[in-house]
Image (cartoon, rainbow, N blue to C red):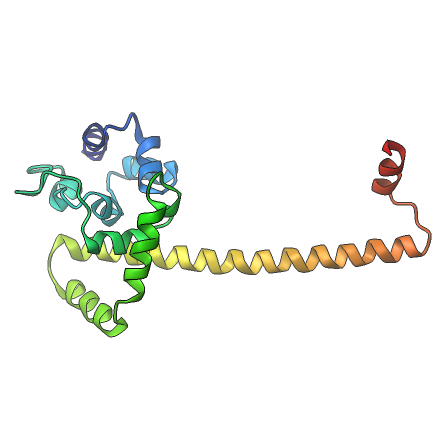
Length: 188
């Protein structure tokens, strides 16, 4: 059933294949492949952020109408813009960068206590939005953790490069002939 849902979703979004769907959602193609393989779209929230007109129940089960009643356009409301700012890869999409920056400013204006209370309200509900929120929270948490880890790796790389530069200078001061330097001298 998941393959059918993804195929219909691609047709609706005018995308050629699942790879384009992954690019559209800002996720890896292997993630979409895993949805097909395991028969479950685990990140329905990612799809709903970009297409709030879709019926969450249809995305989970393939049953019922694809579109929510009375929702037949792709207009993105303020809440979806706010969520899109924290969606991994959203700034890389064509035409989204300026919209994302505006939404980020709107996000910063949100009271943290209000956001926490709204999140709790949705988590206490017995709706498909609860599952979508849980999926998004997990994805956002993992994204933030990875960014923090990468920042640490970047710092380590800079430190290593600085140490290597110092070692090269020390070796040169001791009269060592370094392979890279010999080639540079021969080319010049």
